[in-house]
Length: 121
Image 1 (cartoon, helix red, strand yellow):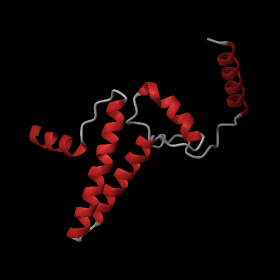
Image 2 (cartoon, rainbow, N blue to C red):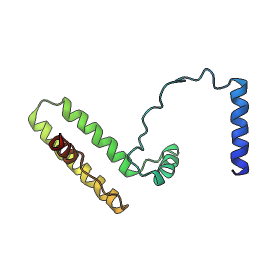
Image 3 (cartoon, rainbow, N blue to C red):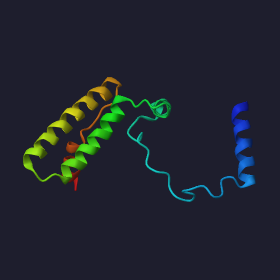
Image 4 (cartoon, rainbow, N blue to C red):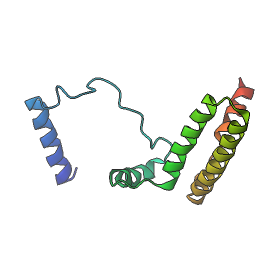
């Protein structure tokens, strides 16, 4: 343990003893889901630093956009609009796959993954 870790642990322990963590909102509840679940563990800290600085990597922004477009697609009833949304999803997914593969991360398209899972049932 480094000196910084020891100091941090002491400060945390002192705060616990003073009861500073007793009435925090969300106490006893699970942590909210992290946007970085799909990011490899070795890259998460750097992404978190970028996020805290207000800089969002393109692939994270693409994932958010894809999820929003999927929600929009599920709510849409006009077939012409649905086709436009599908086209946008495909474009964003392709760009996301290219970025991830350039980082050495193989991406399985969620659509095909769902189809595979259906076949396995």
